[in-house]
Amino acid sequence: ETGVTQSPTHLIKTRGQQVTLRCSSQSGHNTVSWYQQALGQGPQFIFQYYREEENGRGNFPPRFSGLQFPNYSSELNVNALELDDSALYLCASSLWGVSNQPQHFGDGTRLSIL
Amino acid sequence: QKEVEQNSGPLSVPEGAIASLNCTYSDRGSQSFFWYRQYSGKSPELIMFIYSNGDKEDGRFTAQLNKASQYVSLLIRDSQPSDSATYLCAVRVPTGGFKTIFGAGTRLFVKA
Image (cartoon, rainbow over all chains, first blue to last red; front, top):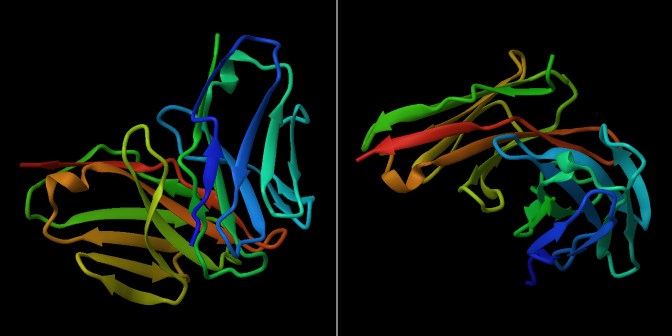
């Protein structure tokens, strides 16, 4: 069974730039959720993708956008980067509509904005 | 009111003691409840999940759920220094195919 993989592991950008983070879901999972975790905070839900569409979004501005591909992998795109975007970005996969099974997380991408 | 609330701690217990971690949630429609452990700089690691009222035991860990009180807890018996980490409570809510909301986490220190 292949677990959730994320790339890159670390990334340094400057204010105003754009970034794309990638996630491959665990085999058998069709839903990908993205989270932002600032230092000392819990993961904050950004959005969730199922059937290549966004299904559910947290309190994040439109400059945070995503994609899901037919193989269930996903991208998170962030435009016009701000200093506060510095965080650990986590991807988790699961099965759509199944409430009693846990999400499985990738190792995350550490994004630093200078 | 936050959707999922945890005491941020730190909670400090001596080695061999029982650590008790608590979590409350606001959405009565919440279906499932998860406890994750997160070491500094690492991603969350699932410890246990529970979706029925009562207790669920797995080794040194026991999860307790009381849906009437909207309360879920995690007990760690025979705490070890390696248990020192941040413990995240997560709640799955029936919105858009179920989304998972996390608390801010409780930092646990187990003193040798």
